[in-house]
Image 1 (tube, rainbow, N blue to C red):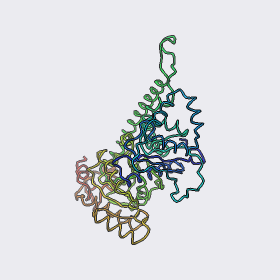
Image 2: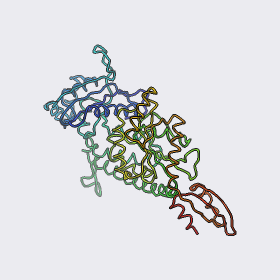
Image 3: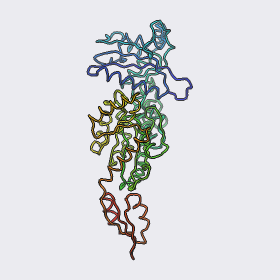
Image 4: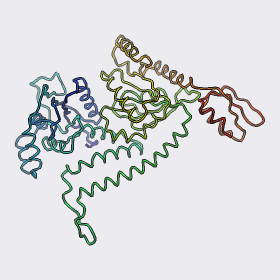
Length: 471
């Protein structure tokens, strides 16, 4: 999907409610895909849903719903018939299979325009130009839907990958996203209708050679290998940077995408990180010290947000970025308290943290955006309910200075309780250690003797032990 068009693409969101998925979770997933579409700059004008026992193996829906999609795309029966006559037979067989299959409906069978209050007499909108599918679908299903509707089809994974591609800024993030996109493309090459022609091979042009499909696959494998080597080299550099911070007190902001992590990052550190009301605005880890400065210094890192049904490859790909969460002394898990589906978002974040091995890191729950509930009475009621269920949590708004001050004090207090007091003797020829001591310790007193400087400090036990052992 191109991101250069000045006019947003008109799109329809389609989804099938399968057994075991309740109405609230189904509606929340659709609403989230609509937000993902808006993040891409797509104008979602309609939603098509159906309740089925399974996804139709040919094209997700049965023939009835497929006809509704074709109508939204402005397709006529004559156009469809003409294209099938020009096809190679494979597409016609897929359409025949859809028409022969029963819709297998049980319950709701809905077509809802984006304006739920629109009257039945309202004029039908202009034809759609894209279909966003709230499922991960097979390459053949995507191809059949594109053949039937004549428009671009993106499943949930493709939408998320496109957002990641547009928002990646650092070399590491761009490489990570490209690897996952290439892996996503490989099984879809055959469905693009390419690959049947062969290039001559062997000495003197003899031999069967490679088909263009095989050649494309080999190019993708080579590119993935090249990007993997680049990431491995960058990982060594990142490990070196983290090693310099190993004795620092570190907090990692984690949570669902668009929960307000970057707004909190800016409020707590004074940094100019990007703040935007959109999904996946942050893909790169940013590390900054708390402001006002503390002694010892506390570092805060902003990490990539999570989302329901996050492609597994992206979780693995961004594991190096999420290592900040693994190595942090505290995870500040940010939750959007104004989102009616926040409990599901909290569950998704917890599951992803466990998947990357950060499930045992100490955690502080931060229910953010409480100011969006509309009234003081609503805020107070929600705050009481949240604290009754999660008594150790904090309820706040990142846009209120008094709340940010409370959080700042809570973070400093968390690390201060583990500090121990001791003395560090620094010889006069090792005065370069002063910077590290003042950054990582609370200096209580500084005195001098014939051999060097004696610092009485409060510091983390492992840091104090290392400093005292330094010759």
